[in-house]
Length: 222
Image (cartoon, rainbow, N blue to C red; front, side, top):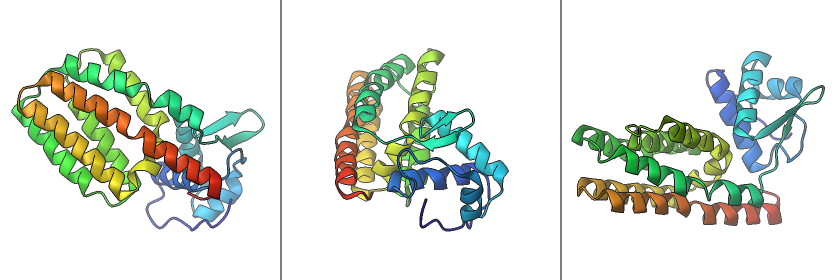
């Protein structure tokens, strides 16, 4: 645990979780490292309560492991996990969109506005939040709630990888363009093409994430 600056924003568990997630992604918290709650709360300048809430949240995302009498440890970022996670949502999201059907003009306008906000995001956490909001708004009329819950679960599991992806401007711009293609197909009334474009969007992040992981492993830095 190194080079940690105290948080300047409000000490909510969400803010703390974002800070710790960033430390995992950039290597300030090493794979397998046991979390020392006292030291980490002091380094971040927060109390133990929001820190513990944040650690619970990160454990639910799969970023941390938790064991009795040991506490929390950093789960490694791995190629194997990316391979398994990123092959599933290209199957789930297009099916949820197909079941949702064509959006109303009002929802289409909301999706376009969300994508403009996404394109203007200036940090990874904001980009992830807006990307998730866009994808959930896209499928909000899906009648299969179990399918939607599965997608929400995968959003959590991929969050630390998405942070590495979307904090890079070229990846953010590519994702924005992918969204635009989905929306253009929906505007034309072509649901099948929209589902195909969404599948492409879901597949497009895997290669840059694997490249980032490879560079990270070789250099030891994010």
